[in-house]
Image (tube, rainbow, N blue to C red; front, side, top):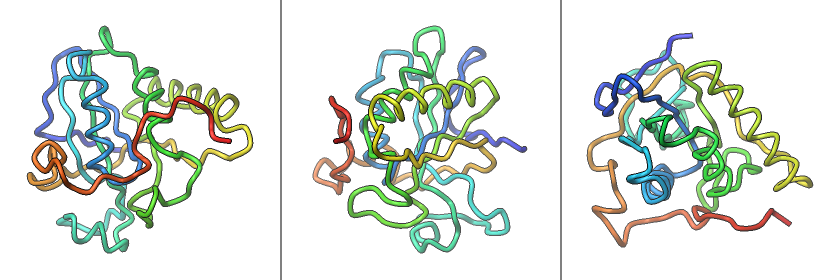
Length: 185
């Protein structure tokens, strides 16, 4: 496994990274930034992860074609002494529908799949544990489709995608991106 780290994401000697995919990255970034700003989140970038390694020069147009197998993702840099991965994943599982395959709301395609892309084995163990809790307590009648795998490849999205919904308050926001307060019926 070759993990790549965004060269532009802010980090410290004690920070960790986690990469998450939950549909359109604009809404995912927006929700996570609002939830964790000043709570241990150092930085968050939107980008493209874990696609076909033979395809290079990854960009939004290529990813949206569905032909690259890259997934729209967010990469978070956080201080684990202030913000626990389990807390991040709690919001992740409640902010989208992890039971849909390759889709969130009206957005369809492999680029919108639900995924937790781990940066080390400790992250993987936490992700599996949190997923199992949500499967039992929140989605007992629906199979969670979230993929949990190591981060292999990361490309920052173009600058205009970073912090998109702050720059474009009326911009498209997937209707599935909100914090759920009760399990799926």
